Amino acid sequence: SSSKAFTLHQSLSTNKVDLNNQVYSELFPVWSIAITPNGLQLAAACADNRIHLWCLTYYKILVSLTGHGDTIWHVQYSPDNRFLASASADGTIRLWEVDTGLPLSILRGHANWVWCLSFSPDGMTFVSGGADTRLFVWQLYSTDETGQTV
Image (cartoon, rainbow, N blue to C red; front, side, top):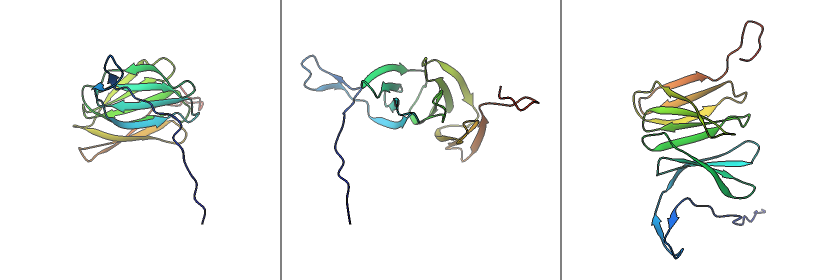
């Protein structure tokens, strides 16, 4: 049997170090991560209730997304790399525009914590699941009478 050896390529952190770069002065564990399908960007949902977007070419933070009022349990990119969705204990799902980091929408429906979400392969819909035992199917795009995506 053959086994593949894996090596650590890069170590990233949003934790703040002291002035001597010796000890972390604040610690923010990572709850969820996702990589864009094109492999260029990483989203890390951390305990500071922010989503940090990293460039995977230069390993630098591009932007830190704020808006959730509680723990962000799950993040996922859309298949076309255009959107990032985040599920939170604040009972909301937020959609973000990947290129700008701007919030597009705040979706409410779950009675409390939203634990997870997943995009369909075509990116037209996504599903969220929550502590309220419910699954919601959200339509990201719609089509007009000619079949064109709007």
